[in-house]
Structure formats: structure tokens, C-alpha cells
Amino acid sequence: MSVQIRPFHSRDATALYAVYVEAVHIGAADHYTHAQRLAWAPGQPMPDSWPDKLAALDTWVAEVDGNIAGFMAVTKGGYIDLAFVRPRWMGRAVAQAVYERILERARRTGLPRLTAHASHLARRFFARNGWQVDATEIIDRNGESLTRFAMSLTLEGPK
Image 1 (cartoon, rainbow, N blue to C red):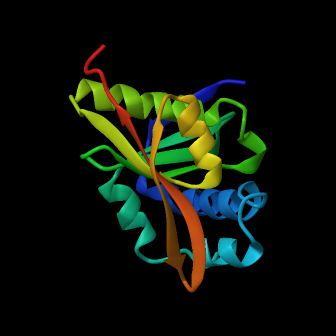
Image 2 (cartoon, rainbow, N blue to C red):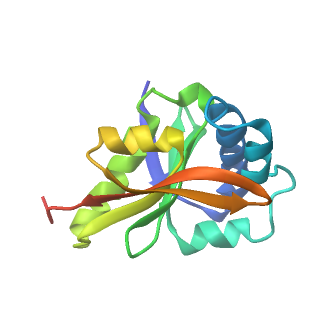
Image 3 (cartoon, one colour):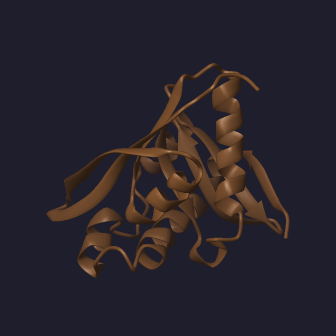
């Protein structure tokens, strides 16, 4: 299996929204209730703002055999705003491949650190990559309380 990483194109928006919904509803099912997942990712239709949100971020798409398997999107300041992988590709190096692209670009541009608000599932991934939990938070999302983790990684600079 070979994971290819490429920049986001506007034509990817619908597919990336499907990855997001699938990752939340299926991938996060062991960590959040059905009601919490529905509040987090209500499902279809895709919000009108979704394509613009992806375009405003530094968004990277992971493909396996020409099919979109996941994506990550980061702000210019180093905040990983979105990080999702299709459940069938979880644990198969897809997230790692796209994360390494983001990490490389962050180091190259001289960012001092990366930050994220991670779900239970993403917290494990980031922790394996040397991130620390700075705070555990309970947030309200569409009337449901969700636990998330403010996390960070201090960067060493260009390599």
C-alpha cells in the first residue's frame, strides 16, 4: 500500500466532507455516544461554508490507490484544525503520512509549535508523535457535551 499526499483542490470538498462524517460517526464510535457524534457531525448536506473553510487552511489530502483516505488542515499559525481518516484506513499509516507533510512544512516555515484540539481518538495519534496534553476540555456542540484535549508539540526548527 502506498499513501500519496497532495494539496487540496476545490473539487475535493465533497469527498473530504464524507471522510469527516464517516470518521466521526464510525471511527469515533467507541469514544462518543451516537448523540454526541450527531452533534459533532450532523451529516448531509455538506455546509455551504465547508469548501471555503478547507481552502482557507493549508489542507493536505491522503490518497491510497487513487481514493481519498484522509486529510489534515492546518492554519498558518500551526493549529491543526481538521485531521480525519476513513475508518477502513485507520491504523494503516494514512494519518502518519499526511501528518509528516504538515510537520515538514511547519518546520520549514519556522513555526515554533503546533497545536490542536484533539478527540479521544486523535489524542492517541498525536501522543504517539510526541505531543503533550495541555488541558482536557468539555465543550458544548449543538447541545451535547464533548470531551476534547488541547494538545501541543514544540518544534525544533528546520531539519
